Image (tube, rainbow, N blue to C red; front, side):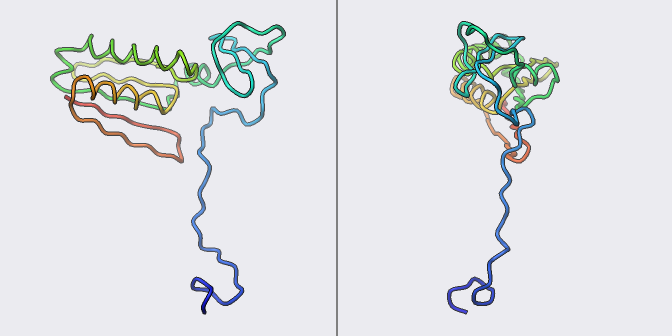
Length: 165
């Protein structure tokens, strides 16, 4: 049995794990005709990337993945904020989150906040991508300390970030 991994000589191994591709239902399945301009936010698609800029002449009208997520209220990320510190510094914490979004969105038009929902003891921020909640959570942790954890499920393209102080 040398040279095989538990099978017969010459037998092809079939017990390997199957790794599925990341499944983002808002990712375009087919290549869009470029240049394109989002009819809602005016982001531009050129050379396979969305960016901000002047609308190219003859650009096709397309709805970008971020605007589709916003319209459907289907977030790719959720950031849960809680704790006594949040109660006392709510405006400051939300302001930091919004500044981080502006910085991120400036370079990546598809990375946006969908909604900020405030409760008595918590704030929930939903986003159009998986990177922004982690960036905001990291900025909160760096600025104010506290406990930060995140849970990412690759097969569902969704991240949940929790920050508490």
